[in-house]
Every structure is written in C-alpha cells, then in structure tokens.
Amino acid sequence: MLNSRLKDKKTNLTSFWNWGPLLFSGFYLLPSIFQIESTDFMQMFTIVLLYLIFIYLYVKATLRGTEQVWLQLMSLILVCVIASYLTVGSATLFGFVAYIVGYNFSNRARIFAISILLLALLSSSQIINENYAEYFLSGSLILLVALFSYGIAGRNEFFHKRREKQNSKQLEQFAAIAERERIARDLHDVLGHSLSSIALKAELASKLSQANRQAQARSEIFQVAELARELLSDVRKVVTDLKELDIDTQINRLIVRLEESGFKVIRNIKVVDLPAKLEGVVNLIIKEAVTNILRHSSAKYCEISILQTLDSIDIKMKNNANETSQITLGNGLSGIKERSLQLGGKAEFSFCNQQFVAFIKLPLSIKSERAE
Image (tube, rainbow, N blue to C red):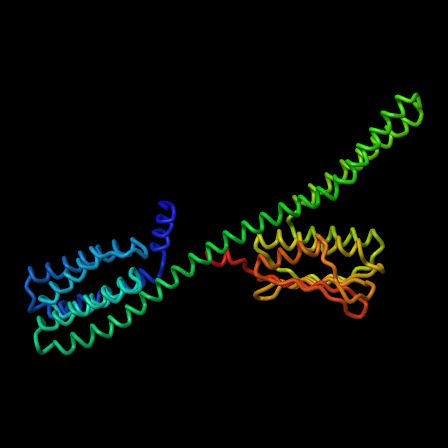
C-alpha cells in the first residue's frame, strides 16, 4: 500500500496534467502589477504572500494523488476569498481550485466540492468593486469550467495508466506461466522417452547379468551409455535454446537447421528493433513454428516472412502439407496461439493450395511498456 502511494506521488511529480496549468497562475499578479503605483507596499506584500500560500496548498493537494483533500480544498477556497478583497486577479485562482476538485475528487464528492467552490466564487464577486464584478465573474467562470474539465481529464489519464500497468503485470505473469509450461513440455519431450529407455535397458542388463548372459548384459549397458550421452546432448541443446534471445541469430540458426534437414527456405526478414520482452516471445514462436515444419512438412520447402510495421510484427510461415479439412493443435501450435493472445495479438492456422500457413500478428509495443 505504501509503495503504491509513493509511486502515485512520483507520477504526480512528473505529470504535465498537474504542473502544466501552474504556468498560467501568474495572471493572478497582473492586475496588481499594472496598478503598482496605486498599491501600497503592505497590500502588495499580502497579495504576494497569499499567492505563495496558494501555491504551497496547491502543490500539497496535488501530491496527495487522487485522494480527496478536503482540508487543502477549504484552505485554498479561503485564500481565494481573502485575495478577492485585495485584487481582481483572484479570479485566476478559483480556476486552479476547480482543477484540484476535478482531479482529486470523484462522483458525489466532486459535485459537492464544486458547489462549495461556486458558492465561494459568487460570494467573492460581491466583494469586488462593482466596476470589475462582471469581468471578475465571467473570467473566473470560464477558467473554472476549463480547469475543472482539465482536472477530470488528468484523473482519467492517471487511472488509465494505472490500469495499463496492472494489465502489464498480469501479462508478464501469464507469459511467465506459459514459458514454464513450454519448458516443462520441452523437458518432458527430451527426457521422458530417453529416461524410460535407460531405465528399461538398465533393468534388462541387470537380469541378463544375473542369468550369466554377460555378453548381452554388456551390450545393454553400452546402449544405456549411448542413450545417456544423447540425452545430455539434447538437454544442452534445450538450455542453449532457452538462453538464445537475439532474434537475428535465432532466425539464422533455425534457417540453417532447416537447410541441413534438406529444406529449401525462402526468407523475407525485415526487423528493425524490438523491445526485449517482445523479442524473446517472437524467438519462442518462431522456434515452435520451425519445429512444427520439421515434424509435419510433407515436402522440403518452406517460406519464412517476418515483417515489422509501425505498430506490429507480422510472422508468416508456409510449408507444403497434405490437404486436410481439420487442423489439430498440438503442444507447439497451442503454445504459439496462447502466447499471441496473451500479448494482445492473434495466431491463425490454415491450409491453402496444399500449403500449411501459420500467421501470427503481435502488437509492437507490449501494453506493460506503453503504460510507462
């Protein structure tokens, strides 16, 4: 809770919505400056002092974030009313109080707070010299409406960014879960069959040894050693795949793997720069797609297209396949679809002209980063 409040305060310190309008608060001093000759020192000193007090209260209210700040609000209104006895420039300050109401309050509290402010404004208009009352009231009402709306917009932006940040954290959690599931699938595929074979052959070797069939037992033990070496190589390959994050290296390595398997590969790669998190997901998707081609392609031909646009990255993989009316999603294709959906993208699989087509479209900027 404390960390969340500190982050909200940090956001408020850097938000243009909060500090941008202060540039115009100086208009409060203009009437006194223009009438400097008819304003005595004590009056000018009081006008400036009230302005400094107002700025202090305004900053204090702003740093409270989107909390209701009744004490600061009433203090600000009191400063505005007192300033109205001294200068018509107080009309400017009423608008800034309206911003605090729009930004810090919501629903019924906002209506109640703006009603108090309007009542104070009308009361102050009776204090002003009647020659300036019309100007005072019309000017302050225009500023009040404008900055009140500005405050509501700032509040909406604040909550929008916070929702995006929360959605970003959820996406990261989902991505981490999906990645753990993928690693579990890979390890199961790599280790499951090999370890079962090792266990069976070791048990068989033990029985053959007990039956004094030493030659056959040694043969089985030799096969166990070979299986263990192959398994170690496969595990190292999985670990290497997990560590690999550079997309150019990943693509080139996968294309070499396809070509070594006898595939003719047509490539169209146009990737400029990807966020690190998105690059990792793209690498995993491409790897799964290439693995699917190696396992299921009916001919040694495939096309790989990876294009980066202004707002997305489009991945298209084609390979020859037998025409079928139904696509069965195994672990690989299911993993691609899940990762794409978690990032707000899409994954489509289809057959066209005896070719299997996988099309994946991912937003270029993951929500968690855009929120920042």
